[in-house]
Amino acid sequence: MAQLPEPTRERKPTEDRRREIADAALRVIADQGVGRFTALAIAREVGVTDAALFRHFPTKEAIVLAAIDRVGELLFEAFPPQDADPIERLGRFFRQRVAVIRGRPGIARLFASEELAHAAPAAGAARLAEFRGRSTGFVRACIAEATQRGALAPGLGVEEASLVVLGALLALAHSRAVPPGDVADLPERVWSTLETFLRGAGPRPRSAARRPPPLMRRRSTPKSKRGDLP
Image (cartoon, rainbow, N blue to C red; front, top):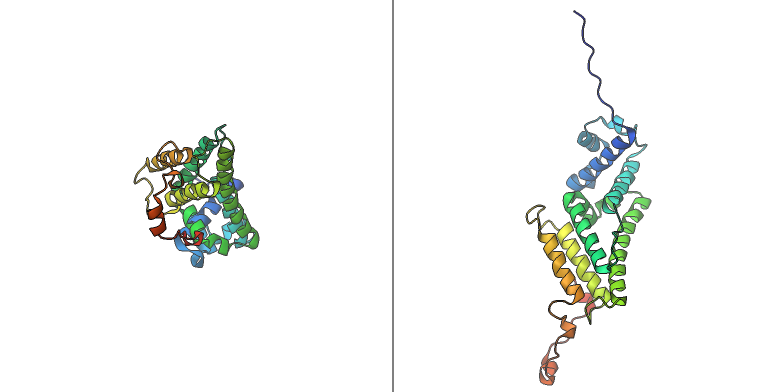
């Protein structure tokens, strides 16, 4: 009886394998930290030998750079969102960013701890800083455009509005205090509250509220400095 040939192991295309390795590197750094970020740990995550990794990448630093590029692909897919209304455009960005990061908690932990920057060459750390600046710049640009169009609530400035939006984004996407899937509609409800705040359709900002009578103003405590903000 003729012996059947052993089945050959399916080989993935090079680009698919490189992306798989980059995703595995992100998970290892996020779950185990930089101290355990080794070629062997990544290989085990992928399910290949450590020698097989270096058929796709020349060095471990090259794997880190690929992981950083992967973060950029995930964060900025379909970016920038399109909408004539700058606040609607900001809402699209807010929802997309929260969904991506909550879907991959490793990204949040990496940015919060900056561990990926420590494991990366200087070019990789600069790339991460570029991601932060690009996101923050988009938020500020949307709010500045809303101000120019008269769409922002009276008395609300670009800087404070940007801080509120970015703070909510960080709390939802980067905080472990809100487990993924625990409250599926929370991001939408948070954005609805933010939109009301930005457009001024609800209660007026504190700066626009009625000022207290003179006697109360004299007895009030001094305002806190900006440096006291968290």
